[in-house]
Length: 174
Image (cartoon, rainbow, N blue to C red; front, side):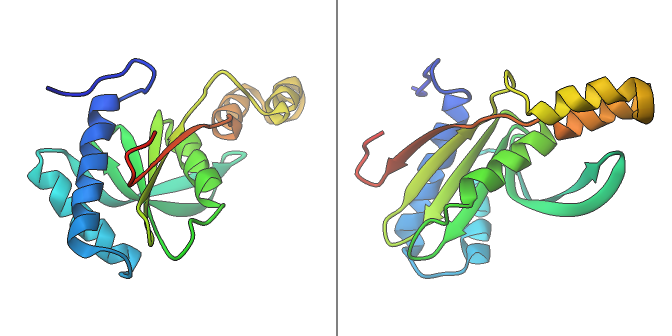
């Protein structure tokens, strides 16, 4: 029976991904490069019947201009971003990085899977109820300098929100 909890969006999907993460960690342990874990987890999740896309590129825009690309480690079922991290400690920049990915893709949820000395999972949820003040300023100026069509695209890219973060460790707590 699948675990579903209304307090955790996509709980059945994330449960499957987290289970695959722990199976991969059990098989490989700590010490490999992110690319090894990304490929191994991809194989694990595909075997479990999940749709997995690896190293998916996304274009980033600012004021209607393309300014760069980034690659999501994994996108599961076209719904969930998975970011793989390794090292002795989980980098504090991982959560803002995934939040930025969520804002650009408009996907609802991301998982940070840490293949460190102890495995860790961080859940980052897009909270679309908040906006940065820059959007209000851009909307005010949209009739003056940006024009209607550009103002809409600026607001959609500039929109950002606060993450709701949860975590668990190999002890099963959380």
